[in-house]
Amino acid sequence: MMHFKKQLLLPFVCYFLSVSQFFHVCHGDVGTAAQYSPPYLPTACFGDDQTQFPSSNLFAAAGDGIWDNGASCGRQYLVRCISASQPGTCVPDQTIQVKIVDYAPTALSPPSAQSTTIVLSETAFGGITNVPLDSINIEFQQV
Figure 1 (tube, rainbow, N blue to C red):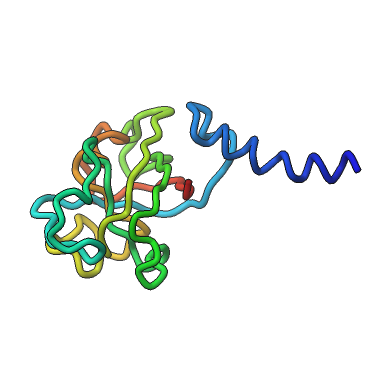
Figure 2: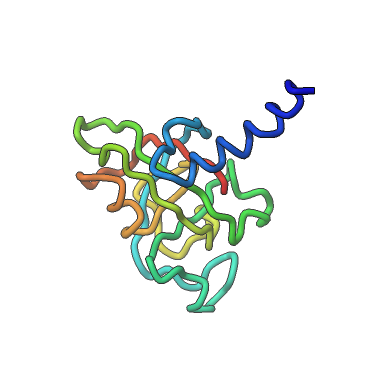
């Protein structure tokens, strides 16, 4: 019976740790991220609605791998930079939470790199990187 309780508790503990500063304790999926610039409207998820963007400007366009035929619209992801082609690019231990508002292949503004897992707003990309590059390697997890 105790083993069963541990199995139920582990996902909760992992989720709790993932939303705290200890995101690296529970590993998410690994992928790539690019960035895109304004104009951001209209989006594939919410059209011309200005209220779709979080006040923090931490939002993103989903790549094919997480688009899920539009079901990803409005989903929230924790994202952190884990590596890049240039050393020192990633902000150490920095995790951001972004909201999916668009589909990367149809976004009005082209991404800095094609075929990435996620395309971050300029603010989001700058929140986890020290150096502007076309793409970075990320760890991400849906919350």
